Length: 497
Image 1: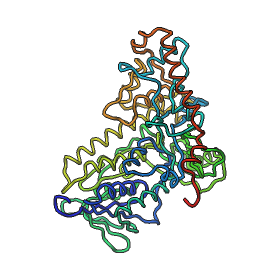
Image 2: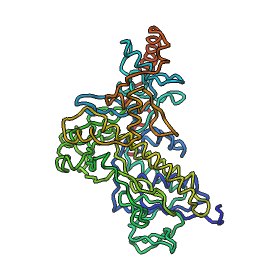
Image 3: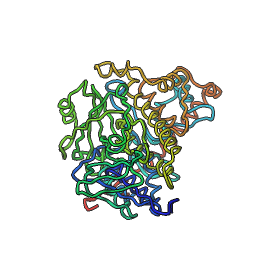
């Protein structure tokens, strides 16, 4: 029980992935101390176009003790080993940012230093050839390996995921209220007090979670928390999504294909393919974007193209008084590296760690906001990297991205890697050293030097070291079944599921 001797009333405003991820976690973990009600309306759609995830969702599902095969069947899922970036560095160029670890580090220096020495000697293959996940992705192979030996994520139907989580939440006592929020009442001292629903009912609460999407009904409209705009660094402000019939076996990676004013995605599920285009409306009209998307897809179109208008940035506070914003209400970083669901997950887990036993404490609010902003800025810099570090000058969009002023934190990372080959990860940042190394190399930044520890090894030792890693990768990948075969065995989707 709580300090007050009663269960705290938690109101989640909005459903979708953000709402039901929050509800499932609270219902399962805090069921004896909170009374959770989620209010949503079937009349209001959700954005719900993001279907690619990153490996942290594997951890989230395990924390909730979700059976993975059952989950995969429900969400029509496929496995994801990374993202293929096409036309980002130059038109016709391609590289993969994988989820794995490349090569073998020394405690003084990362693998990239030994690889660079090998390149100088002419004995090293492409950097990605020393990464198990990348080679498996390229050869369209997948299987679970012992001791979590293969890092992976999922491609999912986000609407099906929300429905899957709803079942978990309701099984643990979460109540769902159908309705549209018409008004928000505050207490005399400015906290959220209750929500007025369009059927005339009222939901009183002690604690509120804003999952109302871009509108940010609670954190923005009611509590007046402003928004920091990042479009001067991330200029894309439109997305159009469409689903198509699959025309080939699903690959275990997301495709991100750059065009003259942004990029488009291709995400394979078991039953269909998710397609979309992201672009800057200053450089491409919505009609032009729609035409470009429809001209580049394969398979019969299953849905009408849906336009989503957005503004990259973040709320100036993610937690204000007795309200936490989760999902799009907290801000938006475009889906280039599939971080949207991760950010929902991190907000939910952070909120669970700091959930107030009695009244809200300002120290918790301050810590929550500080941790969230630190993570957001790290992810923001990683996304900016893809746009800024490019050789493309063929359109005004790419010339602008190439020449834009970037955050000092990103300037330092690029200078450090370019001059010394060094990459450091601080305070459990989402993207580890290998992610930064893969993308910086993929985008054309080659270090001018390597750590002297690589020179301690003889030429024969360097060659043998690289060959041994390559042999292990090749042998392991050769023993994996095809991605399609593994799906059909492990988690085949059926219409009845």
